[in-house]
Image 1 (cartoon, helix red, strand yellow):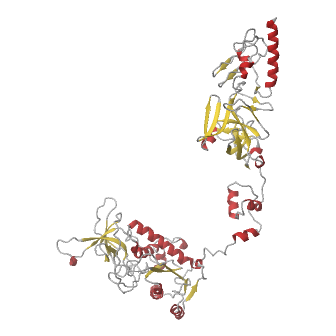
Image 2 (image 1 turned 45 degrees about the vertical axis):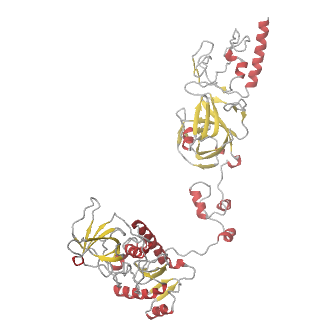
Amino acid sequence: MQMVTDALMNEEARRKEAGTEQSYAFVSETSRRGGGRNGGRSRGRGRGQGQNRGNSQVRGRSQERGMPCENNTWFEGYCNYCGNYGHRKRDCRKFLREQPQTSQNTSQEDGETMVSLSSDVCLVTHGEQERLHVGTHDVEWVIDTAASFHATPHQNLFTSYKSGDFGAVKMGNTSFSKIVGIGDVHITTNVGCALLLKDVRHVPDLRLNLISGTALDQQGYLNRFKEGTWKLSKGSLVVARGHICGTLYKTHAKLCHPSLNAVEEEISPNLWHRRLGHLSVKGLTTLAKKEVISMGKGVALDPCEHCLFGKQHRVSFSSTRKNHSELLSLVHSDVCGPIEEESLGGSRYFVTFIDDASRKVWAYCLKSKDQVFDRFKLFHAMVERETGKKLKCLRSDNGGEYTSREFSAYCAAYGIRHEKTVPRSPQHNGVAERMNRTIMEKVRCMLNMAKLPKPFWGEAVLTACYLINRSPSVPLNFEVPEKKWSRRDVSYSHLKVFGCKAFAHVSKELRQKLDIKSNPCIFIGYGDEEFGYRLWDPEVKKVVRSRDVVFHENEFHGCAPIIRQQHTPEDEVSVSSNIPLSDEEMHDTTEQESDGSVGDDDTHSDDIPQQGEPSSEDEAEGTHV
């Protein structure tokens, strides 16, 4: 009698508990092939082997929950766990209550597994016994390590969204479903961390929300699967946790700011303009092209008074204009300086003249600004004699060196129109200003590579202008200024690396029988009226000129700082690349870079330019190209 009473009480308690657990348990919907106690086969993985009948496969750490057989076959015996009569240990309520609450109720038929959740789904996180109930904005996600991207069937989850045809995705049953949209989803994980899922695909036919383990790896996250648990971390921070549910790893997350996760309609550009702190039209267009914001076709803003109050600028100057086609129709001029170090000849400034039609540049080194007028007269006479044309217009700034009475009277006497820029508007003289910048950039590069001190800036300026005139010019559609000016082909064979080591031949008149025949020097430029290269002799500290030179273009030894000496009273004039090429042949022996040997003493017809203004014999910055 006692045995019957215990069995009835046990059955009543079991049914009551089964009714309460149904609200949160995972329910497996399967179609079993075999029924009854002896039907089918069972396989299990983990600590415990499942003993249910039917074609079922169990994975995971925890024990399979005991459920009554489908034919309600009663167990006649005592529980090995609680000692009560009428059930096995795997069906023991006490045993089940004391085990981690993970669901192992799965079924498999023909390779398809279907898992349905009750209305109030819960998921127990790692190491916790309490259940996290899903709220209004909680969403269940399945972690899929085989998926190459995130996917969801719910469009309202997206923070940003773009609709379109993005191909198709292959489902587990070999069918294909279209991807109708792509965007980002912001979620808050079950551990309270914010997580951005990028490039989530919208697949309406999908039944589950998928988080791609591969995509998370690409974002720098670490996925860990161990003993039925999943942990997502970045560095030492745990971002999310989940558990295995059947054969799937799942987690729950809330939407970040649900009101923002609705698909935004096209918003007017004016509203985006105000939202983004009065962003410019160019900025809005860039964001729209990157598909960061959604706007209608075209970006046209209404006049914004606040932008005028806060961001009004001066009217921009025209950045481009058509060049004059005739030589000397317009010449640009500007003075650069003072430069912190005096040049070898004692100069602190240099003035440039640029022909607008050919973009050829001439440079003169100056000791003071009041020398500009004298250099302009030399330049004027030289270029008119070379071209046979008259200088028509000179454009300069309003500096005192250009506005003196002598300068104005000279221009008036020769019919030269003098255009002066508006005060504090250097943009009007942009050609000359930009040329000065280009020259100084080259000077800094050449001096730094040659390891030469700053007093060599004058030689570097003249060499830079010489090279600029032989380089393609953008305003000329990449034509060469020197060729445009002289209408002759330009030779490049005589060019050498500024500052390299050079060996000048010592003539027999200056040496005895046992003296060396070569003098080590530093190459600092090209000759002017006297044919040859300009070399710096570090022993005597003076400029020498020679036509018979051997260059080691890969060696730069530099020189010691220059000790300033008393300057000669003679003014120095330096002109850059304004002299026609010479027809005289120049002997040039150059070291071959391949084997370091000295080449043959072949005679090369190198065109070495001449200058129009002579200079003193020993001054460093005489007339120079």
